[in-house]
Image (cartoon, rainbow, N blue to C red; front, side, top):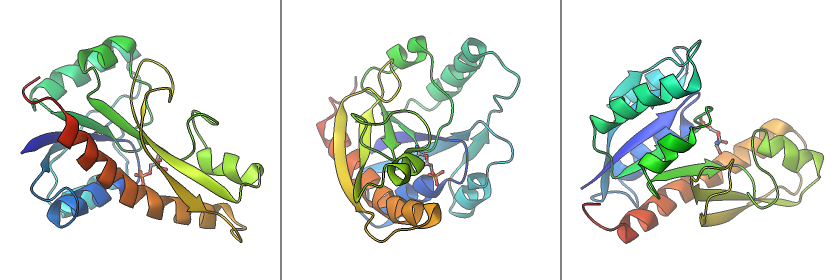
Length: 194
Ligand code: GRF
């Protein structure tokens, strides 16, 4: 069974979707969440995840220098020996040293086509640019900002979506489906025991 550690900072809807896909979906029998780590004490996802039986650890990042925090996070992660680290709305940029500690073992979901838009506010960007369709991207994390190799992209139909709420609702629906699929695909291709 592949060991996942999920990192999140907020609402946690992707974390919930991954747990659902483990219970009955593309990740059933393939993976389990060893722990979910959250860097914000007030994140809504903490209670949502715990209600599903996911072990959540809160490791607050506020007021801590990035390198020092990443060291603490690294130590925490090593306790769980993850096969894959899954970023699910993780709002901190990981330091290059951290990324190098888990080569090709960190995956992220981005609410836009990473070739066209990197960083925050992917749905706002799609709306401002009046896109009829945007592409959600699952990619490996490298040392850049949303520059790692793509695993899966999936289209979100934005025709007729006139509010940011609607754009985001449609996008998240696609994210939740594509993330579990991409993780399953990635786990099936990982060398074992690396
Ligand atoms: C998602 O839109 C994801 O693509 C981005 O951050 C958001 C997290 O949402 N990286 P949630 O916390 O999983 O609901």
